[in-house]
Structures are given as C-alpha cells and as structure tokens.
Length: 363
Image (cartoon, rainbow, N blue to C red):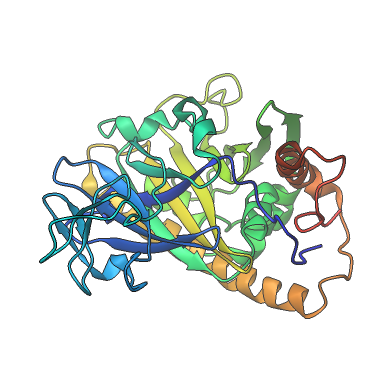
C-alpha cells in the first residue's frame, strides 16, 4: 500500500536528474528524493549539482548566476564550485572553511544527467543504465520529454509494467484497434538480475493510429505487433515496440524494414512521496531521414503520456484517500509484481533488514 514510510525509495542508486539539454547558461532548480538541488553547467562544460541552499543566509542557489568559477548566489554574491566549496566572497579576502554547501556526484552520459544522492563512496558510474540509442541519432533520431507528475513514482512504473491499459486509454494513438486483440497478447515474463523483462506478442492485429501514421500501413492490413520492456530497478524502463505486416516473420526477425519500430527510455525520479519527474525519449526507427516523422512521433507520444498522467494523478488521489485499503491483483500484473519486488529487494539491501517498509507494495 502507498503509505508514508521512513524510506520509500532506494538512495544508493543513480537517478536521472535532467536531460543534458535542460542545463545551459542558467542554473536549474529541481527536487529529487526531497532534496532541493541547483544544477548548473560550469565554464569547463561539466555539470555540477549542489544543494539549493546557500550556507550564508539560506537563499536558493538556483536563483543565482553561473560564473567562470562556479555558481554565484544571487543574494550576496558568494561563489561555490562544483564540489560545494566557497571560492569567492565579495569584499572579503579570507574564506572560512565552513563556507561550503553539499554537492552530489553527477555523471553526464548519452544525453542523460544522472545524480547520486546516497553514500558518495558507493557511487559507481558502471551501475548507470546503458541506453546506446541516444548515441545513434542517424539510425534512431529522437526527441526528449519530461513532466512533473503528482503521484508516487511507483505508480508510474506500474503503468509501464501492465500494458493492458493501452487500448482503453490511448485509443487515438498507440492503443487504437480491437481491444481483445491486444489484451489477449502472449506474454513472457522473466526476472532479471536488476529487475524484470517481458515481451508481449499480438499476432495478426489491426495496427493502432500512431503506427499507421508512422509506417504508412495500407487500409485493412493486419500486423504482428510486439512490446518488449525491460525494467531496471528502481525506476528505469527500456522499451522496443513495433509491428511488421503479417507474413514477414516478425518473431524471427524484428529488425527489418517495412514496418513500425520505436525505441524508448522511461525514467522516474521521485521528487517527494507524492510527486515525481517523468523522463522519456522516443526514437524513430522507421523513417529516419525525415525530421518531420520524428516530430510527428514526438507529438503522438506526448499526447499519449498526457493521457497516462491524467489517470495516474487521479489514481494517486483516490488511493491516498484510503491508503490502507488493499488493491486486487489480476493475471496482467505478473511483470508489475516482479518490478515491485525488485525495488523492495533494493531497499532491504540498503536497510539490511528482513523486511522493507511497506510503502511501495500493493501485494
């Protein structure tokens, strides 16, 4: 059940803090795991992450200015480097050693900005989720999105683990077609070392509107459609979905021309117990040389996720009105249950206790 606990999320993990393109000439304010942050890009081009609180009078550093030596507080002009050390005080030559703010490990890779808010000695960049398609804009042109969602981050992950909602919520985009063709998909779920993987196959179905617009499928054609998702705890999902005309042997070879193909990354960064940042990027794998195709795909995906967000926020409001009331599992929850258990294991490992707090489990 989604109730408050001492630790509703793992801390010794990498969370996405921003897209690289979000951090430019001005500092960026963002809260993650209840920690207000000031993100900035220094003169050397590297991203720094400081607590959003000046050590002098407690003002928001995100309201300051990026200068050659670091981030300058907008209130009295003190300058802090990316390590949190004060390097300049206007009108004062000596700098007291206590004049510093918290800083956090940051890694910028594949257009992601990752942050570590746990024990800094355990911050291993090798543990960061790999998403190589952002490095291949020629074959996978893409565009990023981000939304602040007023719900617990695990509800967002739930939504990505049970795709039977798609034909109901997303009728005009990725879910159109015949409902029963989609909810009766053949589904294979496997637990992984870092989470859970599943693939759904829908044989000889009507392609949804987004697929028709993208791939130009002719009227009345039937396709073999797949949805492959890998969840990496605590809050990343790597997706490959698409469709090929019936008879192309999609199950034997999905990587062939003449169909619809979409690579995606979904990530949730908890802001508070009741809010999160939703990061997503969609890569066009069908008309790569046409920028308008990527723009059209982005618009379709953005509309789709706005529909999800409306449901998630209403769902969270209803759940929190009676947070101890149990929810019922059905057969389509098999991947979602494994996802929840993976996060619970991660929290138990941090706590070194037999049972994690019950904030994230609805089982």
